[in-house]
Image (spheres, helix red, strand yellow):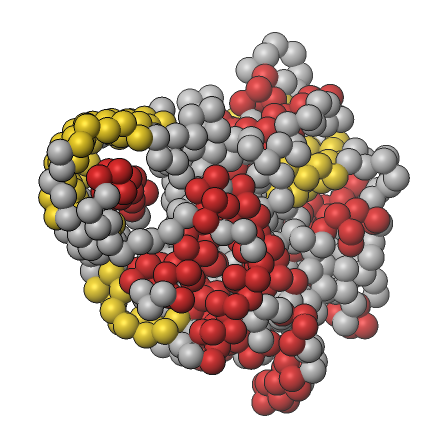
Length: 637
């Protein structure tokens, strides 16, 4: 984010910190569901516009969980989930669990930022529920805020946080920011360094390219390749993943793939896989469960397409859909607040004070000036079209902020290239499988004092401390000792990782397939291997089924019954139908059961495996197929 605030700085005098509220006061009340039994909750009234003595106020909601050990707290840990627009109170329980060892001598303070969650959430229905043209929706949302449309930036948020701190009588905070949250951390460090004890910046957003994010497509490609290389099954079937991905992008660019794809539940969708469709496959399920399933299957799908088989690629497309509704605006996230924060904070390739038509023209001119090499293996047109097509690509990229009202009193959270205070310890972390922080170590770390640690978690996705126990342990150690401690786990590419918002609890959720064969023929061992593939595919797809019924890749169904998966003629290959019942214990990732096989050959098999565990890379398949008794050990992904 090194250049993000440069243009805004000409409107203000180096983004001078806002004036603090006079004697902020906490009003205590009932705690929300999920708060700790010992928590104290309430609101602090802050001025909407601190430059206006007659400003109206906003209630800033907080949940304070006291430390558990005797004696005073070292500090209060304040979380910022980023987004922007994401509720911090909504994830309070998640972070208390993740950072539990540090809470013996640290309080935990969750604060919903202005316009989010319980702090007078911004409600812009067309954005929140993805209704109609989203540029029109952004224009309407900004207009609804009137003169306050530029009063939701990270600078105002930093002053709100300090008002809550003061109202609760807390001297020092440890600020823990993830994703866009490090912008809040840096704003606080600039404006209120005397009350900052230490900071953790996890997966920090530090783009200087707020419209185009041109580092992302290359990062998506690199991470997709890494996933295949780290998946035993995918790497067994794919020796040149970077070339295969580039070839697939070129193919769908010139000859888009269309047809009917079936999602995990068996719902048919007419899909089109062009470059934008391929980007959807790589992005929309990044936070899908199990982790990196799309990336692990894409290469085998590309080879199937080369052989004239569209089915695997069409299924990936059918399962990759942008959000169509973000729920209530005062719930987990406010899309209106997302726009209000990002459009205020960011520097774009247009003049924010110009008429909207001029801004649009400036955006189009800037887009044409981006070289294709910047977004390879995808074209610039495909990338900008993809960003613009997303309701919210984590943040309102492309031209999403062109209709936002011109700022009345711009106030960047901190000056461009603002160095980190020399006397405040900080820990920076990034993920080797994170699309967003590919440049942070190179561009953000130089703003910090020499010796500031930047720890890369090889198997971490975006927000490493949620994906990886290794990352969470390093962060906890830093909070307790102000140094990261032992980081030997960080470079382990076979180390534990897990999609943080799902229910696949395996130790290593990096998987793939080596191929999508259409037929088994009369080879008993091949029939047995493809029968196991049908079982395993049902397990993976079970995480993507919203109800109780799912569909096999090439037909048949399966039903979910508590810890049982019942298969009804499910087919991974056209001529191998699998019927039977397996138990899948999510806590241990253990699969076992008995299945009957019909089709090319009939058989009866017992299958067992432990998924997502490097110590158990093989499944066990035993029984009879045709007239042959057999025992095989196919890969457990």
